[in-house]
Image (cartoon, rainbow, N blue to C red; front, side, top):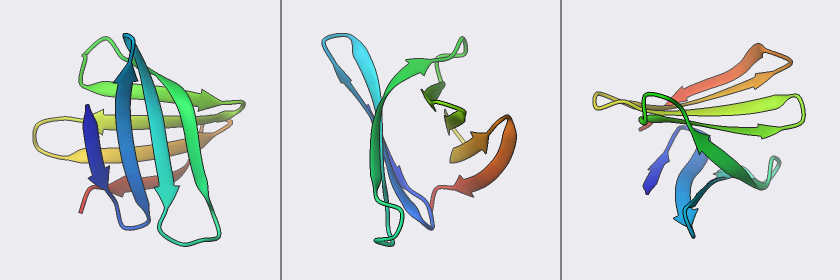
Length: 82
């Protein structure tokens, strides 16, 4: 459905049998990769995935794509597509 990269991550939203999934891989070997269920938000342009107290917001607006990672509601990473 969607694939882009930021300065530090490869980001994908894929679908299988009507369900969405978030997949991301760090460009540096230290952070690894993640694969989680994702859910489209009301605007149908953004997706969110949750892993405990960490949220991954993937914004796909026409002008730019972004990845925002929050822990306990506090933003820890925000990167635009390159």
